[in-house]
Image (cartoon, rainbow, N blue to C red; front, side, top):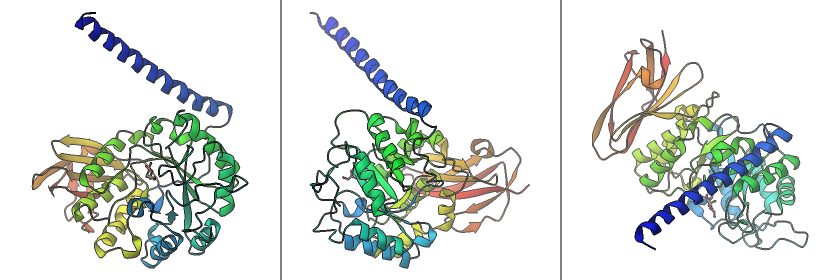
Length: 409
Ligand code: GAL
C-alpha cells in the first residue's frame, strides 16, 4: 500500500472514530432526556444551591492526611474567624475518610484510625456549630486515592447511609469506574439521593468529561467543568477560561464548578489570589476554601472575607459573567446583577506592568448614555465621578480591578 493510501485510511478511521464518539455522547445524553420526560424536569429537585455553595473542603490543603480533629477544628475556625457568618457554612470532607472495606452489611464506615468517633458524631458536632457537613464518594468501585470504596452499585445504600448520618453535601468523583458514561452513572446517585429522605447538595465531579454543563442541572446542583486545579497562576487562570465557555448553563440550583479555591495555600501572589477570588465570584463558582482555615493569615482573610465580592457571587439573579472583550492580555469579564446593576472584572493576565483597559457600556450591556455609579470592590470606594458611556482603569500585571456599576439616571 502506498503512503498516500495509508494516509487516507488514517483520515477515514479518525473520522469514523469522531462520528462514533459524537453518537455515544448524543445517545447517553438521550438517556438523560428520557428520564426527564418520564419522571420530572429535574431528577434532583432538592431546592438547594439557589446561590453557589460556600464553605471549605479538605482536599487542596490536606489531600489524604485528614482526621476528625482537623475537621472539628476547621469547623471551630470557620466560626471563630467570622467566615461562617459571611456564608462559608459547608465543611466538606474529601477523599480518604472511609475504611477500604465495607462492614458485613455492606455499609461504608468511617476509618477507625482517623475518624474513631464516626461520621454521625462529626455531623452532630458540625451541626451544633450552625454549619453543614459534606462528604465524598465516587461513581466507581474505588475513589481516586484507591484508599476507600466508591458507590457504584451501592448508590441507594450509600445515599441512605449519608442521610442517616446527617450529611448535607455530596461530592461525587469519577475514578475507577466500569467504563460506562458518567451520564449513565451519575443519575443513579441523583435518584438515590432523592429517595434518601434528606436534602443533600449534589456536586458532580466528573471533570467536564461528558460536558456536564449540558445535562448537569437535571442531575446535580453543581458540576466540575475542568480537571484538578493546582496552586499556580497558570492552573488557576486556565480553569477560569475553561469554565467560562459554559456560562449560559449556570443558573440558581445548578452551577458550573471550575474547582475549589487555592487562596491561602502559598503558590500565588496576593494580587493573583485576588484575581482567583474575583473570577470565581463573578463566575458564580462554588466558593469552597481550600486552605488551612485554622491558621489563616490576615492577607488571606482580607481576600476571602471581602463582603462586596461575596455579594456578587451570591446575587440572587444567578447569572454567570462572560468575557465580553479581549485584547491581548487585557480582558473584561462582565455579568448582570439584580437591580439592573452589572459586575465587571478588568484583568491584566500578562507580564506587561500596566495596561489601560476601557469598558464601553456597549460591551457590558448597559444602555448608551446611561449615567453610572462605579463601586470599586477591592478599594471599597465609590468612584467620585459618575460615568457615562465608559469606564477606564489601569491594571497591573497578574492583577485585576472589580466593580459593581449601578445606573443612576
Ligand atoms: C479528584 C478530584 C479532586 C479530589 C481527588 C481526591 O478526582 O477532582 O477534587 O477530590 O480526586 O482523590
